[in-house]
Length: 402
Image 1 (cartoon, rainbow, N blue to C red):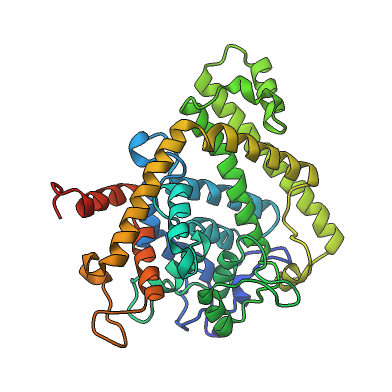
Image 2: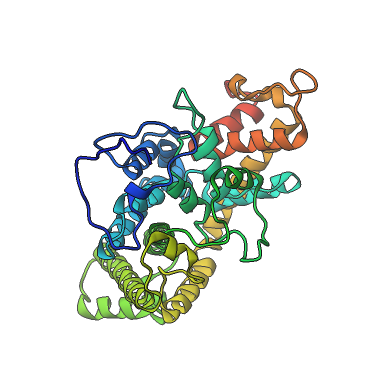
């Protein structure tokens, strides 16, 4: 970090927190702001990005026209950020970094939620596959076009590391692992320590993601009448909460009962995470952010009992929500939209908008199939649900305006 910086405020952190004053900087050096820390600037750049705005019309499970109530990637990201900030504050960690990571973690998601990602990954298998977390890295370092001096948002090392390790280390201690090319390239420039865990703030953002989607998936599923409250009474973790709420507030309206259940579920998961994390901090006693990275297990974690309950709850949601026939029908439509567009744009790249067409090195207007596939994937992944439906009609409906 440049020595000339003189931020006008001070903040106390735990010794194992990511301190902005010790940031490893950015890929492309640039002057830092006097009134905002580097991590605050990362957060602000995410908030002002086109990819973040588009999350408003990218859905989690339900397609956008199903109703205004259901979560979108935008509302999900805001909920994750709120949970991440609260946990970070309780542990004396850097709230700004945790918030930046929480807000950025879904920037690479496709339209139509997991159905859209599955479809894009299937058609991209011959070309390296598709993963929304890797796509988020592409958005942050390449695809956002807002600054004159560089592509992407040029986030700090700590933000890039946190996004890349959202699901943990990419390679083992012996250097074995499957690392996507864009991350290999970044690692060669930034030395991202791919065999270690990310910062405590990044670990918090990842688990806040789990907490948020459990809570809002239950909320959305009950709102959509995919299953009834009573069926959850036998499910670990959520079952005791349902029973407590129903016994305490038997005459409560269904809407309020659902919100009370969701609120208590979030509280139970956060409380467990804080308890287990404090136990691990006492066991490993990290004295710096680098100590957090070198510990062979994550320091931010749920207890073993909560992990097992989470797995059971995920299985319940998988069978009762994600495989519900209404969701299956939406997912089927989504897969067709994504697959149709990919196949057509690969076969006829001149149908891409002008700004998305490239000139190859060998012959004008041509690039190799792998690069073309990644270009088409970037184009489709950036679409909102609504735009994907409209673009599909433009490409396949003879009566649609082009």
